[in-house]
Image (cartoon, rainbow, N blue to C red; front, side, top):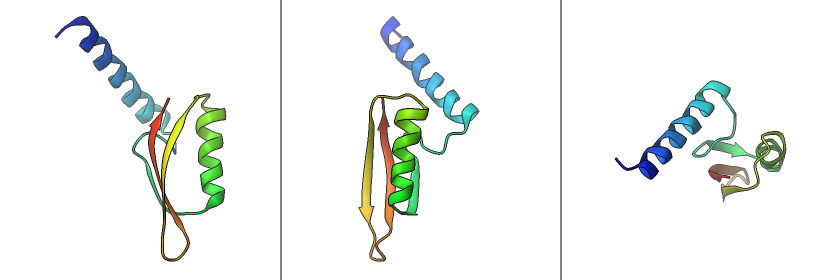
Amino acid sequence: MNRINKFQEDLNYKKLYDIVANNPKYYPGSFHKNSDLTELIDCIDQVLFKQDNSSIHIIIEKNSNNSLDLTVDLIK
């Protein structure tokens, strides 16, 4: 394994550890079924401001009952 791959692997393990240790509500891959606009705003506030990240990618799906399913795709 070359040095760059080892560094990336270490980074991935650190991200996984941070998710498990800190138990955040919103993390890459987290799915939030039957959400509303309040939860969407909370997600953005938590990830961008309280966790001090610069970018979040969210997949939003509208359900037939007008609720939203949120999937946090990427956090930078």
